[in-house]
Image (tube, rainbow, N blue to C red; front, side, top):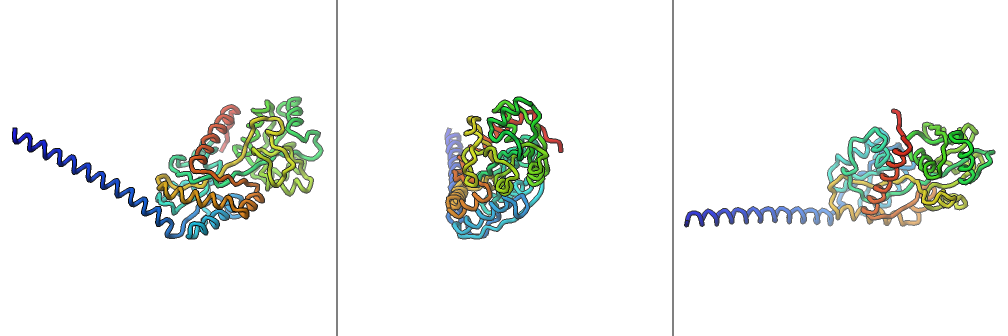
Length: 337
C-alpha cells in the first residue's frame, strides 16, 4: 500500500510539473508577443504590390506606405512583385514570417473573384491576416454619344424592348466591371450583350468611337472622356455619388434599389501576425485614410477611403464573396483561359 501511495504521489508531481511547464511556456509566448508589439516596428517594413508601377493599386499603396511609415516611425518600402493577376505578391505575403514586416494589398481579384472564377490562387484567404480596408474603387456606367437613353430607367426600357441586343464594353471577362453589369442585369431584369476588351483603354476607345453602346469603367479612367463629351455618364455603381462627378446619380438612386458594386482593396499580412501588431497597423492605416490630403488623392484616383476595423473589413469581404458568388452562379459566368 505504501508503494502504491508513493507511486501515486510521484505521478501527481509529474503531472503538476508538466502543467507548470506548459503554463510557463504559454506565459512566455504571451510575454514575447507583448514585447514584440511594444517594440514593433523596429526596422523597415516591406509592402508588396502585385501590379506594375503607375497604376491605381500601385499609387494607392505608395500613398498609404508613406503616410503609415511616418506614423509608425519606420520606412515602408514598396516592392512591385508583378504576375498572375496579382496573386504572386499575395502568395509571397502568405509565405512570409507572421511578424508584421511584410504587408501588401489584395484587391477584388486576389481576394474574391479568382477564387470564384479561377485560376484559383495558390493560397486561401485564411492564410492572410486582414488588417483593414485600404480603399474602394468606384465604377461608372457610360453610354456612347447619340443614344436616346441617358438614365438607368431609359436603358432598362430599351434593353427590355431588345433583349440581348445592346452591347456593353468592359476591361475583360471576369473583371469587377463585368460582374457589376451582370449584377445590374439580374436586379433590373434585363439582358445586355457583353463585349470584353483587354483593359480599360481599348474599352473606352471603342465606346468613344461608337462601336459599342454601353461601357463600365473606373471613374478616374473615364473622367477625361466624360468632360470632353466623348461619352455620356449614366450612373455610378457605388453606394454614394462620386466627388469627381457629384451630379451623376447612383444606380440605386436611379431606381434599382439596393444595388451597390465596387472593388475593394484589403491591407493584409501573413496569418498568425500578433493581434497587437495588427491593431497597431490598423490604427496607422485608418489615421492615414482620414487625412485630408490622402482623401483628396483617393478622390482623384476614383477611390473612396473606408476606415474600418479588421473585423469590419473581414465582414465586408464575406459580403462581397456572397454577392459575387451568387452573381456568377445565377449568370452561369465562366472565364476561358
